[in-house]
Length: 83
Image (cartoon, rainbow, N blue to C red; front, side, top):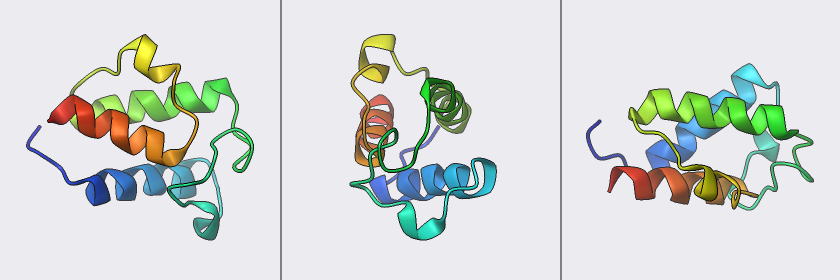
């Protein structure tokens, strides 16, 4: 995949959360905690990781995946993969 900006990655994550997981668009901010603020569970988090893998053609290592708590963490992890 060609280089994406953090904004493009955020927009893709936002699209997944709003369209697929029915999260209100206003709740999707960089600071939002996936589990506490958005009430997602570990299966939802895995689903996001799989969708981002398809978006980037790169797999997020399990040790990175375990560190993810916020939407910004997702953006930073994916950005790090494609740098």
